[in-house]
Image 1: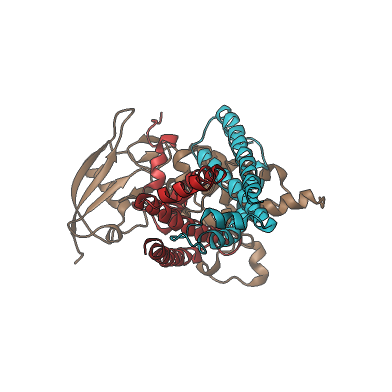
Image 2: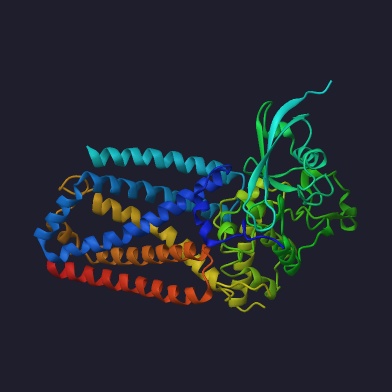
Length: 129
Length: 243
Length: 126
């Protein structure tokens, strides 16, 4: 009787990131998921990169010079921003679960964004000057 | 003299397995009427084949939930002036995450079945679900005697708004989890098993869209968090043998 | 009983979720220390440490322990979180029967690799 369109399906995954007609909590969820996936990718890259240490000082120097490439440094800044946001939002989620959920979770999100922006500016300055 | 607005109503249409499309209707409406009134007028005067669900027209039955300009609304209590302006557009679509039966009407069978399974009570004592500031103050001694209709009207809007429900039909969803919390999990191991799994209370990712769209003060997101605490408490009590 | 395809075991979600919460909290602590020690004190510029400075730190057993604990918490939190994202896609039970061991092996393998790396670099310092 009913058709298959509009049913939940895994091919709707892009809709996780559709923030139109959605409220603050969805933006938090989207940023959390994006930063999570980015950080997991970074984690494994970081572990592999550290393997250069056992190749000796020259290999390490080469790696450090490679890492001074502006694209890599922008990537590192994104990791820092993602990590700060993910951690702060995680704290917000912890409070939402074990304390009062609403409406404070919305104000908490705005606070998380403000702190993330300030901290990102500080680290961007440190990285690029 | 009542105001009249000229708006364009854009309505989602879908029949059988055919591809969905949108119909446009230019209408003159009173902005203090409700979105449901406009939809009904389309059915009455323009297109008798338009299919939509509605019953009580006063936010008790939960039938008329739809997406208006992308946001879940209970259309019988949503004023037209809240969602558009004179000369503007009002887009009406069915709820997400439920299979479409026809046009704006969706199949919410899975929701109703699950609400039964977790034992959601639609009528219960006031003492168990106080209406708070929304109701007149009852004399303390008499509160035991009074029953009321549960806040949750099973409209399905929370499930439509939930990002997790978009990709998996197995997720119990905010309404069901809030209903389980209402029923009470203390000592009820079979109910706890139903909600304590990866498709139950742990699947929630705290988008809290459910709280945003609930027309009925249920705050399902908050109840999911409370249910988590209740489940953890019960599981730890089971671990340390005090049952 | 409500039929669910991807995770029929009750009580499984709770422990993984609690580990995610606790490890998340610990990561905030460990990350702060790790970041300050490793990226805010270097002479090589831009937060980078030279080879000699790194070996210097590896002479401290407390540092090695800290890094090992940090690795375990980060891997746990990250892979449990990754699993949660995969579960959101509603995979069939037989798919999860493959993905769960893969994630477990990936996690344990990464921790073993990391601890080996810690000892390998520490022995360079000795």
